[in-house]
Length: 131
Image (cartoon, rainbow, N blue to C red; front, side, top):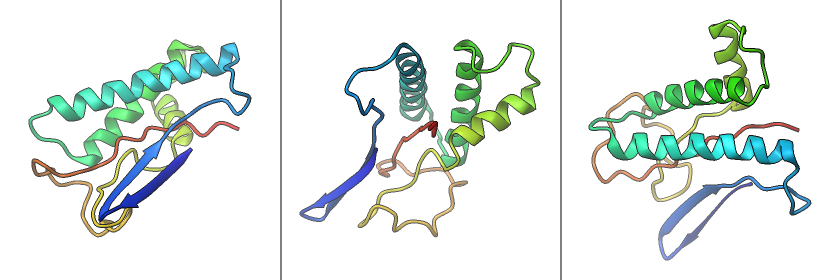
């Protein structure tokens, strides 16, 4: 689920994953736990980095998802690194983050390849699109 709202001039954007049935199957739980780990690592990366760029966060997300793909056995350990990174990118075909301004997606003209000034609000939304 990817949703947002605004209240009294403040906007939000949130992405969450959950099983429609209300209960995780074993495979769903494995994938969810891997994605949760990626999310937690990206939050720590954003918090601990002296300088951060959204483009760097995207690269970090792709690396983390690639590692998760191997760890949970979605692809064989012998998979070529570039094929693994391509697979990770195909599972998350959008950027991991965007700035939040007066509206949810109103900052598209601001480059993702600049140092983010302290106090800037941005999302951290790694998602795997599996159907």
